[in-house]
Length: 178
Image 1 (spheres, one colour):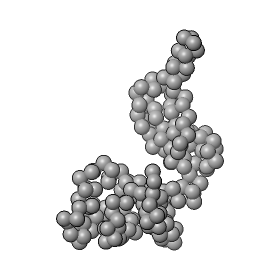
Image 2: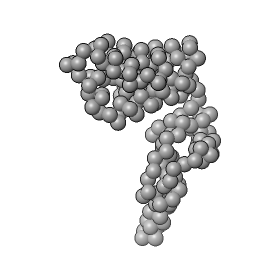
Image 3: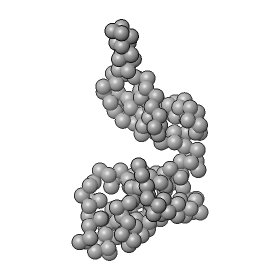
Image 4: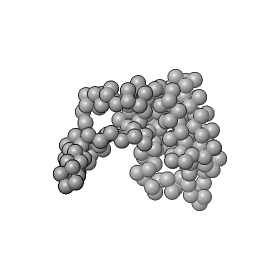
């Protein structure tokens, strides 16, 4: 995803503030949740970006909706409203998470499986695949994909490790058919 220079600047400032307050892990996790809320609720995002709604009302809405997240996040969201940059909030979050991941030696990974992974499964996958990408750990998001039949597919950035039964069957079919 392409990120604007402004989004990177806001992310860097928020990152530095989170580090100064020793809240990097908490802010990172809260920002992941904020991103999910904004992406899943398109109407909310449209309200926050609407020029018809007063900035004070938008900021009050943000304070109420995100009362359980770190206060520096709510303040950053309010700043984006004031500067008329709320439309870049997802880019700001993505840039922040990338900086936090680099600082912590972590990478984001999506693991596709036929069933929900246990914490133990996630830990084993993190241990096995983190070394392959030169990181100390992975932050795993599990997505269910019944078409895999069995096994898993791991996506870390633009790298995909596919050990699914469906892929193995497709390879076998190509070999047999020629």
